[in-house]
Length: 108
Image 1 (cartoon, rainbow, N blue to C red):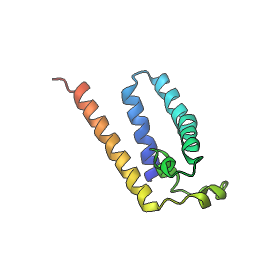
Image 2 (spheres, helix red, strand yellow):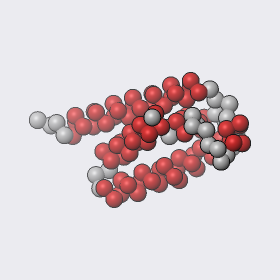
Image 3 (cartoon, helix red, strand yellow):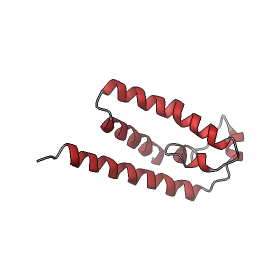
Image 4 (cartoon, one colour):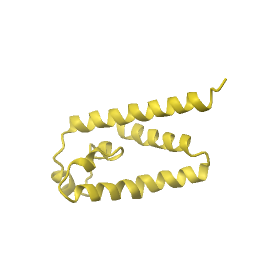
């Protein structure tokens, strides 16, 4: 549930920031499939835990991937810290969307 909520919140933020529908979809897919994974690999390469605290990776790491068990065995970040990180990202994105909505849509 938290993973789906996080992905939808990222999509909502991108949709609010970029007005063009097609461009927002392309940027969302580029972020989810390319940028997030490249950032994660570059941050994990030096045995750093920072890569696990990226916006989408914080929830992705909570769900075990049966195709890559070696990566899950390598993870040494606690589930509680990932849950807290995901909740913080969710709240920050929700506040960003609400402020943007109040500023742009409710100018009366």
